[in-house]
Image (cartoon, rainbow, N blue to C red; front, top):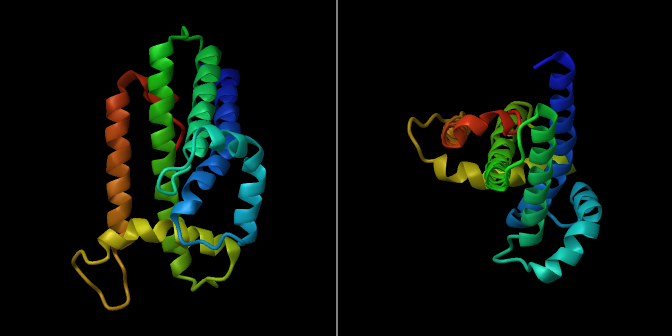
Length: 191
């Protein structure tokens, strides 16, 4: 691939990653204990509500999981896959596109979890203000992921290794997904 093709692929991935992040947060925030009136949560809800709101009547939430937000996230991954296929010159194949978009969605959510844990581990060294809206969301998203790893040995008095264990587990899950996708690995969103 040449420079302009690589640049086009990169720009498509960046643009879609930003939009997908909004809908992924819309999917994930109701599963956490983050306050609904958090200003960043309000921004996410107001930004995504014109799309998710009407779809929620067709696809109601199941156990606080917004199927409408998940469906929009998957549709965005599908649209990204179509654009990438067209840019690279691959023939459009419905089964391949469905598979790539499904893998991309799961991979993207795992990537959000990985980076969230990494940022929260770094932020914990600086004792951030937990009332800060961004910090509240960051810790609200990562705490449920870290909880199962809190009791794993070795235990240190003032040092928590759960982010390390959770990060390794997430990276292994991402690696397994990459290997499952095989030749389609090129179209997974960048880490």
